[in-house]
Each structure stands twice: as C-alpha cells, then as structure tokens.
Length: 304
Ligand code: ASP
Image (cartoon, rainbow, N blue to C red; front, side, top):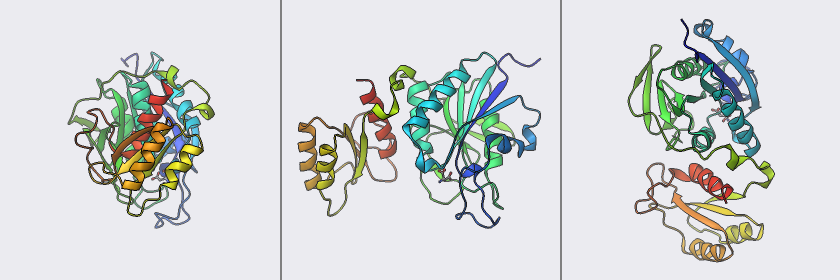
C-alpha cells in the first residue's frame, strides 16, 4: 500500500539541466533554461512509475537569480511541503547560484521533509548530459524514508546546503561541501547526518523583494580601491560582505573604508576568498564563503 505521503513534487527553475545546444558536442555554447520541467521528468524513463507532480516556478539561467524568485520559490516549496500527500520536493536549478538558493531555503525553511535541489553541468543535449541521472537521484533521495532538510544532489553525491560551494567551473563533480549521502544504483547510502536546524520562517521574507535590504559583496585584493566601499555607502547599501584574503585579512585601504562605512551604519561581515575553509577565530556559526555569507547577512537584516 502506498504511504500517505508518497508524492514527490518537482519544481523547475531553469539552469543548464534544462539547457540546449545546437550540437551534442557543445558543452559551453548552449542556452540555459530552454526545456520545461515536465520535459525533464519525461526524459527519465525510470521516473515513469513514480508518483510525481511537476510545476514550473521560474525559467532562468541561475546567474540571473533574483530575490523575487527566491521568495516565490520558498513560498511554493513551503506550500507543497504542507500537503499531507507530499513526502518531498525536488527543485531543478542552475549550478551557478545553487549554493545561494540552497542556503536561502535551508535558513528560511529548514524543513522536516526533504527538499532536494539538483542541477547539471552539461546541457540536456550533451553527449555527457548529467541532468537525467541527477534528477533521478534527487527524486530517489526525496522519497527516502527519514531524509530531511535542504539537500543538493549532483554526481551521485548529496550535500547539506550549509557549507556547499561550486568549486569547479567545468567538471561534472563541481561541488564541495558536507556530504550526507551517496546515490548508488537507485539506492541512498547515508554518509552523514541529515541537516536539522530551526527555520527562520516565511514571515521573515514576506516583504516585497524590492524593499529587501541591499547587501553587496566585495573581495579584498592587491591595489584595492576604497572608492568602491564609499560608493556603496553613498548609494544607501545596508550590508557588505567582504571576502578577505587568507584568514579574513583586509587591504589597509579597505579596512579604513570599512570603518567609515560602519560608522555610517553599514553592517559588515568578513569571510575568506580562499576556496575552502572558514575564518579561524571568526564567529563559530559563520557561513562558508562569501556567497552564503551574503545570504546570511541579507536574512539577518530582514529580521530587523
Ligand atoms: N549558467 C548555468 C546556470 O546556473 C550554469 C549551470 O546550470 O550549470 O543556470
């Protein structure tokens, strides 16, 4: 007998997983966000007998992700999760901002049911298309009894959203982060605990996205020009994340500009521009890297 919560809802947002190129050998000159989510599901024969519903929430290259789409997506995912017949939700997404969307959903929803984001590093037309297997793995994980939280599946690995980073621009195994499971031949092999935390809740993101705090991210580097920080302050930004060098160190000119910015009321958080690791000696709960640190500061300011 099917369990009462056996339905999986697949929400499409675009990305390379739904991208097409003119030639099967073209893995870079393609257009993202061309195929609808129903076509992605239909392209995986193994999903034919699985109780699924699909819906298109957005259709964009995730490099162009907006706060408006995040708000819409979080609200839609929450509505689907609230249905007693739904056991889990899958979101198809681009890889470029996957770590940001996943972290956003993790902090806002921290769901007890699995919300599995998946993507692809090759378009659907590629000889090497990884989208169909990733989608199948994502649905498998969303149907796994006991799985919970916002998870990201690519290349046979499932990661927790918190701490995830796109680490390679081209390879199929492009992501690094806290692994929670392996997907092997249609089975889930847990390798870490499912993420659990307290959700901020949808009320925190309820206001119109154009009235969300303005939070920028800059990187400290040789020859840093402090005019960048002064310009953001003058433009009325509310928050600023700095990807510092090494263990969060800052160019002296940047540091001086940040003191001026702080005096003017700008919230500043410092992370590292290094490809891995967190700032040692920094806040114990600091997000990994500037992409997730920017989302964290945005959500912190939204709660004020
Ligand atoms: N530009 C694409 C996107 O993020 C890249 C990808 O999906 O791999 O939508």
